Image 1 (cartoon, rainbow, N blue to C red):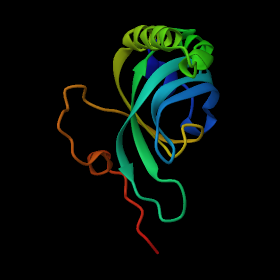
Image 2 (image 1 turned 180 degrees about the horizontal axis):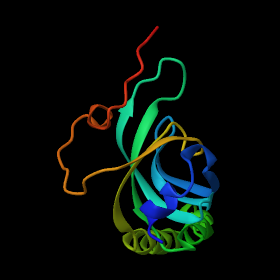
Image 3 (image 1 turned 60 degrees about the vertical axis):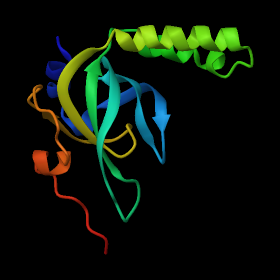
Image 4 (image 1 turned 90 degrees about the vertical axis):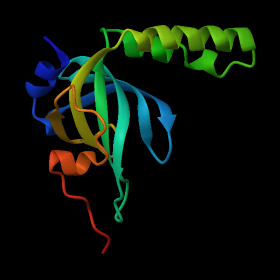
Length: 147
């Protein structure tokens, strides 16, 4: 089953994270890899838009790409090498990470989450849609206003 079918088979509030590794972090995850146990799937995620939340973590929209099973475990096995003081070890780990991420298959799925552990929405978008400046408006998601 494809990623969009798997994600649609389970309500968003029932999704369960098994493993996650953030490759880009600023006040929360902005990109990385994630394996869900429910539904069972793996994906690469990349933030495409962010909405300010005056009451806590910002709302973030992520575009997903499907990863083959075992990809997240492979990335996690490289974590100690990413932190190695040995340049050769670190470069090999970075090349291996690039190969893992390059196996991703583009999807047209965008999800809403503040922390990539709790999910608030999932949309299938037109894959040809480019140049969107405000994904919140495009998806009809109201932005939070400060109190």
